[in-house]
Image 1 (cartoon, one colour):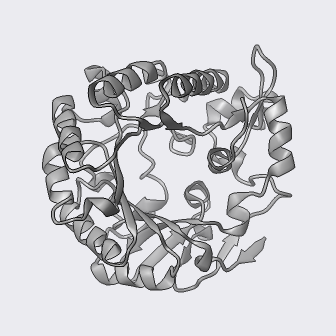
Image 2 (spheres, helix red, strand yellow):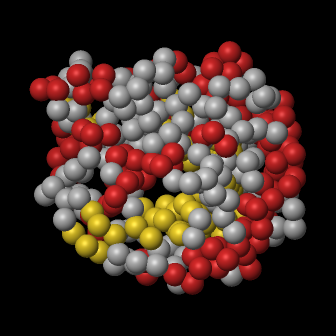
Length: 351
């Protein structure tokens, strides 16, 4: 186990503005990750004093990614106030939302904010199919026309928009339609695709399946081709690497969670500001979170390999892996190796 003091290295912050969790959200997403660690905390709405403490403890903070509680549509006015505090101190802000009451939320969220300090707002548009959207979001209250009106409003303010789909088996082939629709209609050039959180469905049966490793590899390849052809900015976790990519990974690996890093995730608890360098680690081992006042984080280390990969995986994925270890998967094009999603996002592997 390593101990690292690294708050001075933190330049990027992902902020949950409280601890309401899934029960307090405006949606009821079937694959929601707010069912694990956060349910063990007392429900709380953060305050501006905590925002000021964060800026004091993170002297080199440059970017604050505001997720809300746990969506900006839940506590929009506070997200606006928090953003004002960050901007007042020269810190850029970003926002993420499901798109619930999209236009109303956007107008409240951006009130009196300087667009020059808003890096983007992302909309979690997982599919354009109404029935799939209703199923994935667990709500009939999301309206694509409202989301499109909100996007148009953001563009009027010169606020960049990012589309952020999460792909599960049910919508795994919807990525091209998503890109084509928003690229053609709004000239949006920024997308981040996510694999449905493996940690979210651990030991649960909720009628939702992960994308198979070989399919995810195919999706990654196809999306990269689209990005190159259309000159779009698209990021997505590799997660499953072929043999050549894995060799490169091993040669360059410096596990993110083992030495802190530039990114920190924070929850505003009652009387506490709780942190983690790895949200996946926090879901599986909540004891490895730490308070910002402590400045010290504990990490699990296993010779440079993610120590919680297998624990965080869905049981079906583990069962279908080689030797049922959750690390190596067979495909028609050879073995695929499972790596930490955070590492795979940050490192640029060649296809």
